[in-house]
Length: 441
Image (cartoon, rainbow, N blue to C red; front, side, top):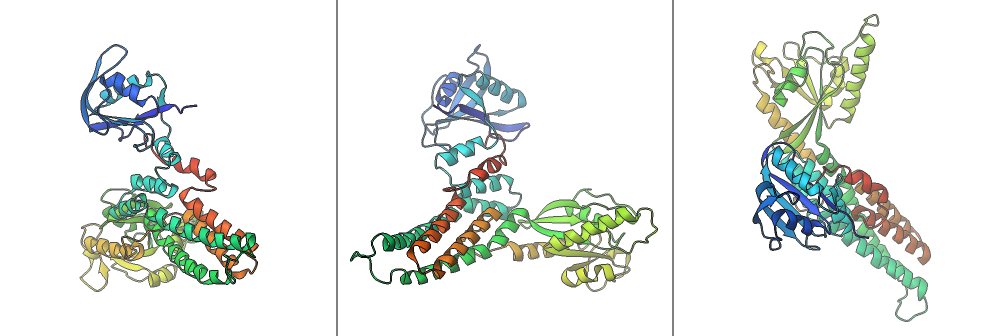
């Protein structure tokens, strides 16, 4: 039974110069012909006067493209309408498509799901496509493009092929132990290839933390005593008012999160409650203590602790001393005191903010850069966990003497590698993954 033909906008909602609507499936050509009056030449942008087939009413003067399957993104017949981006024009086109036989509105991620099912993308590339759509900085986009180009998939397939060759050797020992073409000591000769594979897997796993952090952003927890100007500094760095600023101590209770692009690196700032000793009889003690507990938890999770002190009293008390030792200390309200040593800023005037941003960007680059733009990076916990499983299986294989057990461990290792690119055991992943996409992708 043929799949239904799906359609959806492939561009963002709202007014724009151009909006794109994509159609994929066996009825895509008929729908394009009905609205444009004819099918254009494949893969050639063609001007067409679009009209509603129901009554001939004009829709738009547009560009249309025709991609006969399997040479298309989804592997199916695909049509694209590039129309003027007004809401009225888009609504008229979608309404006309909805009335075409065999068409229905696409679900989230359904175009990418069909590309995966058709073998146009492996699972790692699908995840990279989702990351590229969500990328907020140049470095995130660069990493996603690298994976979308198949870098991780190629590395994994290379590892998988070598594992399969080793498995074939082990199974040959099982099936043909007395045949002349199976040399003695075949299992012993597998030790060195297994050791080489282990080193390569270890390198990929070591890079996993960096890849995952690049997706999520370099996390910076802003810590300090009440009224040191943490929220004012957050607002200054964000370029807008995202946190309430008050002279009243304890105004910030929950953690406020802001995402920044600093020199192309993703940085996530967490503004936290002020840390101080709270009197047991304080009516608001319970709420403030909970806020400080959350602040300390975020400090433990952060890649960098940014300790903000008042330049007029630049001493970290006992509640901040441990964070100040390991973190970056910033003296705020520098406009109120004479010049001095240390990283001084003024959230009020903006003095020193550029220096602070440069320092944060430098630290983010050091933590997130892999130093090799061509090296594939493991970017998700799913990838890392599969690689850990592979390494464990290979270690067990190297410790055994019986060909049967070695072959079974190599099968487990190959299946774990297959999970990364979607060859085996990923059904539980697919629905969650494709739900991340917007409608039309």
